Each structure stands twice: as C-alpha cells, then as structure tokens.
Image (cartoon, rainbow, N blue to C red; front, side, top):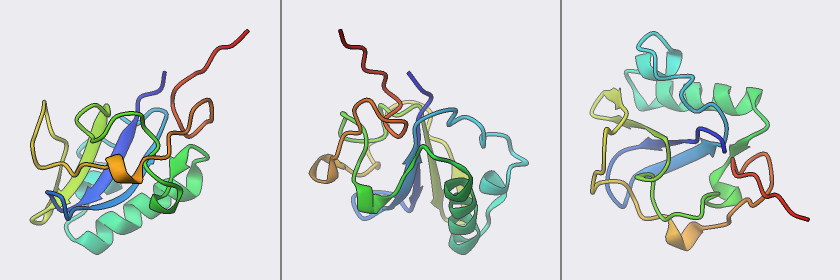
Length: 119
C-alpha cells in the first residue's frame, strides 16, 4: 500500500480539497519544501499544482475522492493551508471535511494506493 496524502485549503466542511496522491505522500513534510513554505493560499495552490504536474498518481477533485474511507483522518498525510500556514494534523481531528458524497474509489489503479491481488 502507498503512503497517501490529501491537500486542503481551509478547515471544516467547507475546506477546499485540491487533490490527493497515492504513493510517497510524505515527500513534502520537510519544513523547506515549497508546499510547507507556502504563506498564501495562492502559493499553496501553486505548490499542489506542481505536485500534480509531476505525478501520475495524483487524483483531482473532478475524479472524485479516491479512498474507501470518508475523511483524511485515515489518510497518512493531510496537508492543510489555514491562517497563513501549512499544517499536518497529528492524530484524529474533527475539522477535516467528510468526503463520503464525493467517493470514487480507485481500486487497483496507480491513483488508489491500494494493491488489489487477484487470482
């Protein structure tokens, strides 16, 4: 299974989900990454767009929520831009949006981060 990551601007049910990656979602956790250095929503959005441009495991909102769970509390990393800084929640938080209505699980694809083994 992959190390998944989700990207948001804002907190709560109105947070804007920018997309997700299925593999190696820890790559941007370093304080010196462009993503973690973002000081404005536009800078964060640009950093996420750069991630999307270089990866084939990026899922956009138009493609639907790629995970079988309903929010980012189960995802390995959630990068959240809020109040001028990027944070990664540590542990369960109640301010991540419920994505159940947008679910479009990517079973067995590069974008799903879940390997399906069959006979």
